[in-house]
Length: 466
Image (cartoon, rainbow, N blue to C red; front, side, top):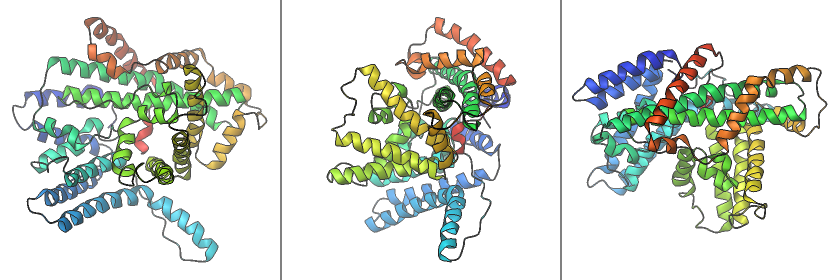
C-alpha cells in the first residue's frame, strides 16, 4: 500500500486510527496486525519474510540478554542473527546481480555458471532488515534490554509508517514508547500537519520534477542546458520524494503517539560533502557510522585506515541502495570525497570561497553523483555527463525535449523547489510551533495535493526499490 493513494488516505488510515483510539487495550498488537495488512497489500508472502526476520532476532536477542549467558553463546546468537538477516537481504536483493556478474567472469575462464533465478525483491527489505539487526546488535552491546515480549518487537519492526521506506528507526528510540506513550491533541495535530506537508512535497513537487528528469535522462542527446536542468530536476525529485515520505512517516507516527527523529536537515544547504551526509538521510548515515564505520575502527587506527574505512562504508552504502555497479560507483564517489575532505582536515578545496559559493560547489558535486545514481549503466552515465558539458552533439529531437521540459507549470514547480530547498527550515521544525494560522493554511494545500493525486499517472516512491 502507498501513502499517496486514495485507498490509504480515505479508507485504511481513517479506519485504523478510529479502531486504534477506540481500543482500551492491546493497541500495539492491533498496530502490528494493521501493519501486516499494509505490508501484505502488495504481496502477502512478503509478510512471511518479515515475520521470519522478527522471530530470528527476537530469539537471538533473548539468548544474548539472558542472565548468565556465556560470552561464546552470546556471540553465536549475534552471529546467527546477523547472518540470517543479511542472508535474506543478500538472496532477495543481490542474488541475480551476483549470478549475472559471476557468469560473465566464468565465461571468460571457462568455469561453471550459476542459474539465473527470477527473484522478486520484497518492498522495503533493506529498511526493516537494518532495523531488526540494530535491535540484536544493541542488545549485545548492552544499549537496550531484550524486548519484553514478541509483540513489542513485532510492533517495532512492522510499524507501517516507517516500514517500507524509512526512516531507519532503531529499537532504542522506540522501546520505551512501545511500552508507554502519551497521546495528546498537540501531538496528533502536529502529526497531521507533518503528513500533509510531506504529502504535498511528494505530489506537488517530486512527481512533476520526476517527469522532467525522466524526459532529460531518456533523451538520446540533450542539449547541455537541458541535461543540467534534468539532473537538477532529479536532485529535487529524489529529495522531495524521500523527505516527503519521511515527513509522512514521522507524521503518521505522531498520530499514533510515537516520536520519530527527523531524517533530513536541508541537505542542499551543505557547504561540504561531509556536511551533506550530516543532513541527508540522517537515519542511514548514522546507522552506517555506528554499525559499520565504528566497528571497522573508525578514525582510531591512523589516517590510512580512516580513509579505507570511509571508502568501504560508502561503497557498501551505495550497494545497499541497489544491486547495480552504478550504485557502488555512487557510494565510492562519495567515499573518495569524504576521505579527501578528511585529508584536508575536514575542509574542502573551496573553503576560501564565500559560504553561498561553497554551498553551490557542494551542490554541483552532489549533482554529478546523482547522474550515477539515476543512470541505469555506466554507458548512460558517461553519455549524460558528456551531454552536460557539450561533448555530444544535440539530437534532432532537442526542440521537442525543450517543449516537454519547460512548460509554464514545470517551470513554476522548479522555482518552488529552488525556494523550498535553499532555505534552512525543514517542515519537521516548522510544525513544532503549529499555530491556528498555519493549520488553516494546510487545508487548501492538502486539497490541492489530493486533487493532483487523482490526475497523476506518475506516482512512484523512489526508495521503494531499495
